Each structure stands twice: as C-alpha cells, then as structure tokens.
Length: 390
Ligand SMILES: Nc1ncnc2c1ncn2[C@@H]1O[C@H](COP(=O)(O)OP(=O)(O)OP(=O)(O)O)[C@@H](O)[C@H]1O
Ligand SMILES: [Mg+2]
Image (cartoon, rainbow, N blue to C red; front, side, top):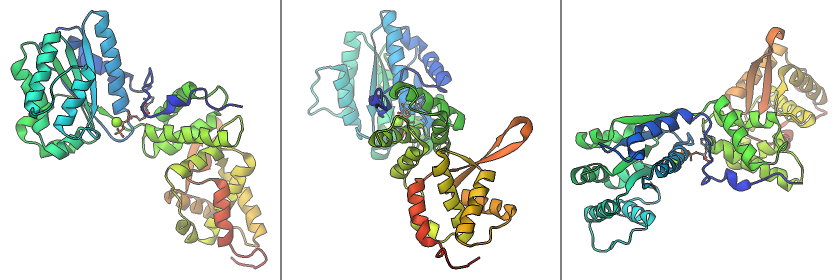
C-alpha cells in the first residue's frame, strides 16, 4: 500500500533530467554558450533569464549547467558551473565566498575587499586553466542591497583583465524592472541575450505534473482527472512550484488515508493546506441559492468521487437540496447565473468543454476547499429544514 516511489523527486531542490516545455530555452542557452563549452570563447557571454514565480528559471539554468559541463568534459575542457542564490548570499562578498567554496579554491578571504577577492579568484581560474559559468539567481536581492556595483564587478573586471574570457555569466531575475534603477553603463553591460520564461498554461502544467508524477509516484496512483484538476488549479498562477507542491501534499494525504490512489478530495485538502482560498466570511455573505448550489456541488462531488461534475447533473443535485430545505428551486437560467457568480468569486471553476458533435458541456469543479469542510461550513448557514423560505 504505497503511494510514493521516490518522494524526493518532488522536492524543490531536485533537478529533473528533463524540463518539458523548456526544451527550446535549454537549446538556446546551449547555443549562447557554445563557444564557452568548446573552450574557444572570444568574448564573455552574458545571458539574462527572466520570468515570474515558478516558471522554471532556477531549474532551467541548473539543468543547463549540468549539460554544459558534461558536453565540455567530452571535449576535454574543464568547465565549471557555479550557482549562487543571492536571496541566501545577499552581498557581493558572500557571493564571492560561495564561488570560492564551489571551486574548492583555498584563498585567503580575510582583509580583502570584494574587488581584491575577485582578482584572487580570477588568478586561480587562470592558473588552473578553467572556464567558468557563474549563475547568479534572484539577483534582485543583491541589487537591492548593493545597487549596480556587483554587476559592474562581475561583468567588467574580468573583461578588463583576462586575456581569454574565462568567465561567463547568467543573471536570473523575476522581474526586469529593477534594471531601471541601474545607471546606463551598468545596464548596457547586462542587456544582450534575454530569455524570458512565460508563465505556464494549463497544457504545460498538465505535462509537467504528469512527468514529475511518473518519477515520484507508483504507477496507477494518480488518475488522469486528478492530474487535470491540479493543472487547472495551478494554471491560475502559471506556477509549476505550486502545482508540484499540491501534487506532493495530495500524495501525503492519500498516504495518511492508507489508500492506493490520490483522489480529488486529497487534492482539495492539499490546496486548502497550501493556501486557504475560501474563508468562512465569504460563504456567509452569499445569497441563499448560491449556498444551496455549493452544498449541492459538495455533495455531488462527494457522491460521484470525481473532480468535475456537469452542470446538468449539478442541477439535479441542486433540486434535491432545494426540496430538502423546502425552497422553490430557481430556473435553470438563474441557476446558471449563480454558478457564474461563484466562478467570479473564485469559489468554483467552470470549464466549458467541447464534446464534438454533441455540443458543449460545462464541467464544474470545486478548487480551494475540501467537500467535507465546505459541507460543515455551509450547513449552519442555511435555514432550518422545516421552515419555509425562498
Ligand atoms: N518544465 C518543467 N518541467 C518539470 N518541472 C519543472 C518545470 N518547470 C519548473 N519545474 C519545477 O517546478 C519547481 C519550480 O521551478 P523553479 O524553482 O525553477 O522556478 P523559478 O522560476 O526559479 O521560481 P522562483 O522565481 O520562485 O525562484 C521546481 O521544482 C522545478 O523543478
Ligand atoms: Mg528560482
């Protein structure tokens, strides 16, 4: 009775051997650095990678680093990939220390200015005949602390000094707007090759989740509709980290339940535990029929054990709930309007799917809250079952 084959494969640090939907960008990086990889760079290469949260910037650059070193070693080139996250190493000095550490260079660090330490590092690199690609991740953090100085140091000093451009740089940004705060000459030393990673859409996230799940889960643990559901939820943010976080947590909830499969309900619990999206106050202010519809939705999803329910099936459940509460059900049009309002509020999700010749159907799902909790929250907000109300 096991869910995970290798849970570690979902940890944020793990770099997978493939990054679906980032193949082009990976290829582009290989092209930009091809002269470095073949040990014949004539100029120092600089690339900027930008993109919002969870678009795969760090993973892409790390995977590129591995590939580049592997390709270079096949040619007998001693290429090193040095990666520093500036959120952790917030000053130029700390960044330099990390570089020294990764090169395993024994250099005196005390009593040296940043620039002196950099020169020592360059001496070492020249002496050893190395080529180095330095990736600075979350550079905003460094710029916020120290302005443009570190950029100047990393781009200009090596250029002025080394006969062969042995150092190349990758700068990773979430948002390129910080560049506007730099002076013109620093900025121009950065601009050039920019790779922008667009936010992932549903289709991309679906493939990513499926791929990462195949590494982490036993086969047949994840049904396709569960993968679709997670992709749907995460596509609101275009964030792969969020998707993988939900995936992992849903697996953990399935483990706790000691079952063989991850269900939509596990996903809802996972989502609720990552970022609570529905609060009790929001439910309280809904009009009566919206509450009844939500109750019907929660019950139908629980009964059918699915991620989605069609609007017509939901309408049947809604009519049953109305009967139970002695309320006259609304017309289908008003029912549909109420659904759309709930979708606008982000409580439910309506997805219109085409069914070929048979026309279109609407799939209704509940994203941010487990059905069991929703039912428990809603029932006290509804009128007593015996009393008549409209
Ligand atoms: N195309 C992909 N295929 C498989 N996994 C991916 C893909 N893109 C991102 N991931 C995974 O999603 C998670 C987030 O990616 P990553 O850390 O690279 O994002 P990021 O753009 O650096 O985000 P941040 O701005 O928060 O640092 C990681 O676990 C990463 O392995
Ligand atoms: Mg990152």
